[in-house]
Amino acid sequence: MPPSVVAWAPGHISGYFRRVIGETFRDTGSTGAGIVTSEGVIATVAESVETEIFVLSDGVENTGSPPIEYALDRLDLTASITTESKLPIGSGFGLSAASLLATLTGLNELFTLSMSSHEIAILAHEIEVQYSHGLGDVAAEVGGGLVCRTGPGIDVEVNRMAGLDDTIWCLCAGPIPTDGILRSAGMMDQIASAYPGRCPVDLPDFLSLSRRFAEASGLITPTVREILQACDDATVLASMTMLGEGVFAIGDDAEAVLSRFGKVYPTGIAEAGPAVLEVRE
Ligand SMILES: Nc1ncnc2c1ncn2[C@@H]1O[C@H](COP(=O)(O)OP(=O)(O)O)[C@@H](O)[C@H]1O
Ligand SMILES: CC(C)(COP(=O)(O)O)[C@@H](O)C(=O)O
View 1 (cartoon, rainbow, N blue to C red):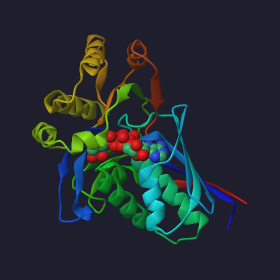
View 2: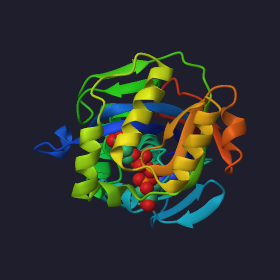
View 3: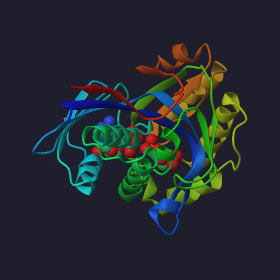
View 4: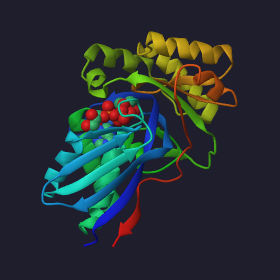
């Protein structure tokens, strides 16, 4: 067994979504559209007699991650895990799903578990749904591109628009705990009625559909409203990161407008899903 394995998974900015509740977690999730981001999570996994998890996100260090600890329990393993991301947690970048996919991909290699990438996605999606941390992030993050998910779970058709080299500019004003929204029946009803009901034809169309959804969803906070207004004034296409108190935008002037409100996180659009980056002998 190698001493450690480094694996990566992309993040996902959801632009719009609608929850679908099925019979089991396999057909539970969401339909919707989003961008798979080249910024994601790098997990370094190593053998250890006791599980220890270090989380480094946007320069902030923490220990512990209930979904990853649960994943280890399910596999009957103990390990030392470090996850690293330039993006902040809880801000609508799908990092809970990315951290599970990166960790499971690393564990699979480290312990020679012989899980297929589909089996890894099934387990990650189950944990996401169980913890109410995400609905469609795993389905999106198993590949790259501008993604439209036409059904719930990970066994459905996912349309991916590839080869997009745009930079997505993001501003995070704060976290929105995903589980708080998903557990609110009132919020979920309004979100469902805001759903645009079709896939985007290109990136600008995705921004427009996302914005229409955000406006009708009831999720726009006063801070996000102020940032979106500044984007509108500068004719910058922008919408709200689902589910985080933040804005994502495209175009030449996006960085300048967003930077008036705080730290701006640029990301590209990922071309592919999770991968083992390094096996350290
Ligand atoms: N990078 C990470 N590494 C380890 N655990 C994470 C990471 N990101 C999220 N999690 C776990 O998932 C929980 C929920 O995250 P969530 O608010 O859904 O984030 P996001 O919106 O980025 O997906 C966190 O409280 C943490 O336990
Ligand atoms: C929007 C969300 C339900 C949560 O996304 P995040 O907060 O990034 O975990 C996502 O999983 C989706 O189904 O589109």
